[in-house]
Length: 429
Image (tube, rainbow, N blue to C red):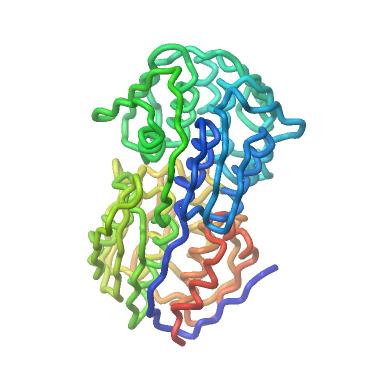
């Protein structure tokens, strides 16, 4: 059902506790299920994607109890899993699908993974190829390129793998398979991608060595259940950081935001654009860095975004593009080809929808060019079933001269179930 957003030029004031990080929430369940003993999770993200991960492991016989944002996982380790009697449905979650392939490859169960219509179009060969080199038994459409994919758990061998692209999901799938392989696996990155898997392996007791862009993991290690504190998701916070910067007379405080340096590219971009932003590190109760971010209405200037910065903000590019429409001068986003294989082709989606609002934006082969500042007007926007395109449109409606209509606002629940509730809580019309 569509949603009409007519905010009549509000200001934004208040304090928001950003919901749990999606990447860390996924991994907390996965690692808890692989570990021996009890794992407790605090601050879990109750989104569609993360609930799909829980459902998969429950079908494998893992005992998981959910009490609001607190989750309790009891497991006797990967060898105690039961063969599922139904297909493992991963919904719209690329993280669940790709990481589960790595985990299941070295298990002792046979299973079938399938996602929704969007996932069935997203490339899996970048994961299945290195897993097959380790001896994984995988059968999928077009030689493992697309789901559904059948996985027959087997004994795996270690691998020395050079990452062709920066992808935390591919890297993580290999490392999770390596955990149950013979010998030492080495993964070399060309560009550093988000390192939540490496940090969580250490948190669960694994001996993993990370030096420069080389990761070494010895197979045959056991994980031990522990307590996980999930920080707020900086990719979700990015939408309110952008809103605080471009909506007049605004000041927002975002608490418990994850500040993992492989994810803070959005902070770097805001600072480069001249945003009035401050960060206070909080007491670190998590294995991940957390802090409080304050942002106020700012005069922004265009910037150039590319290279090593892209993996640190790949999910934030839709909202960065909106920011750029309100910045003085030209903003160039390049080296972002990975956007083409997200929930939708995000280069095309961002350019198409922002153009409808009146933005001066042009697509390139690997990104986009935005000229600003440009006053925006209302329009009927398509989300493409993509949560980040949906939230970009919602934030845009705060500065348009007339109403914005979203065709499928429900897609936002994939990562941010209470997005509109939090938006309403800080809006002062």
